[in-house]
Image (cartoon, rainbow, N blue to C red; front, top):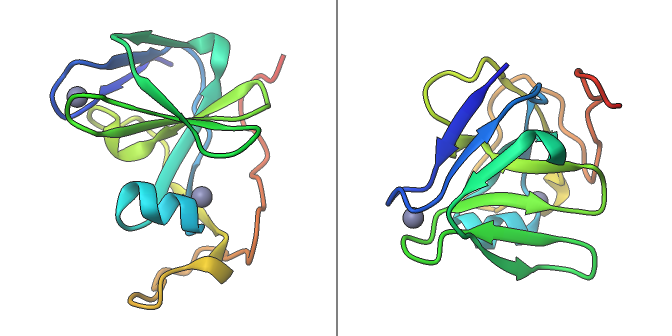
Amino acid sequence: MTATGGCLCGAIRYEVTGPLRPVVACHCNQCRRTSGHYVAATSALKRDVVIAGTPRWFASSDTAQRGFCGTCGSNLFWDGPSNEMAIFAGTLDGDPGVRLATHIFCADKGAYYEITDDLPQAPGDHPLPWVGDRA
Ligand SMILES: [Zn+2]
Ligand SMILES: [Zn+2]
């Protein structure tokens, strides 16, 4: 599978040459602040992600950084300690074939909206099992 995507202004483009994880909606405080609402993100093995352009990286914790375009401000990546990197699903081109599968950190969600689909809701973290080749 190859998926492509990029930021609003086009300065950052990326290509994913391996499988994508189903999309997870994260309602944590960090995701809400960085996105202005909540984040929906897929994930890919870091070795499968090729980035063209130079994202800016913000260390949002001791173990993770968030990648965004320094020109247009698009939020693109969440890079944590595992061998996977989260990719904000709204930045993907076209239909990448993955769908929203679950909500996490629902205990931290904003008061101004409700989660109205029938997908599972976890109060905190609840990583999805990886569907691709984890080697
Ligand atoms: Zn941009
Ligand atoms: Zn989050």
